[in-house]
Length: 258
Image 1: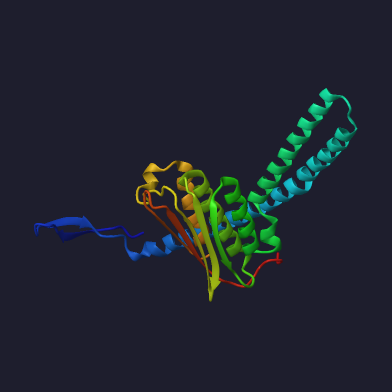
Image 2 (image 1 turned 180 degrees about the vertical axis):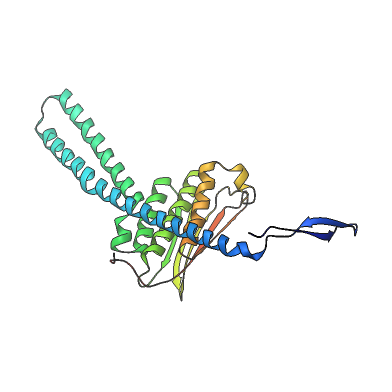
């Protein structure tokens, strides 16, 4: 192993001071291999997470969702045959409760992994998700999507998850009135822009002042982009809203494979 050694430097007054040399280059290949292994592990964890999300979303939709729908149909049939006013009221309440449960299961399934992402691709999933979220939050929406052709599954998943986190931050924290989404593929790149007119934040001090959940969400967006060779940029100032920009390389579609 190679150890660092001392060398002389001049300080601001021109005096020589002793310092330590940087570690020699022998340690760099090892650090590089370690980083590469860590990145490969992180990518694999993300892949497994997406597979688990897909499985759970399908189970929620196909099993629990369908069972609740069957219960609702039966309750509605009973409602039509009941004459007792007191019993009729209880059946009505039960139907409303089951209806809410069905909607909650559908929402949870969609947020875990929208089937549109696998069946129809990124553009359809983004359109449906953004409209659903802005309608529920009462936000004005500007939406522009220009994505022709197929994208690889990993790029689609990364882009959708970044969009999902960015929109969630707007709904929970931004106090915005308007949300603008621009998703377009041009040449060999895919670009996503999420812009809001909310309260904004000081991006420089975010790591020390924001709640842990939000810090981790922003870090997660950046890592998602990096895992597929993309990049993420967040531009925000207090009172000036926030802009999230993500850029990805476009590769051949992997949908339907594996």
